[in-house]
Image (tube, rainbow, N blue to C red; front, side, top):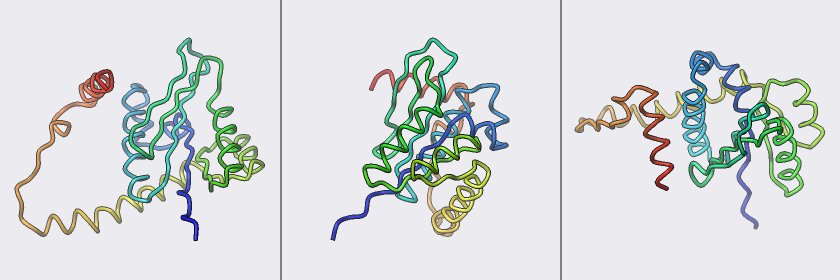
Length: 179
């Protein structure tokens, strides 16, 4: 019996940032909002055993597109100048569905949702996906945090918990330069 392939989630990064209240509050600093979304999706994907692809649009910039692997199953894509996130998401969805993958695209863009359905992928509006992620996070807290909180141990203090978001983002950028 063949091993079932992991489900793949393709996220329209900026669409989600503008749809989720906690990320929308950070939209004045898009680097911080992106970092928060990527971290949250890496954690969610790891817990659920999903492959996560987060696409950020560079349509109106002069930047060259690039891609980053956050971990073995979380992939961040920055489109190249002149390329929309929608067009990249459509291509990814089409290619992955043709390769036999179960693909879920997270976006609230109505036109994009129609194209995605035509490619054979599932669509999830950003607010509905937020509810799913929050339920999973609550389950994580109940299952893991509750158990560890009941057992008295020495608390671990991570440096990142003591830093403001801008400093954490700068340190993360420096870390990635060294890799």
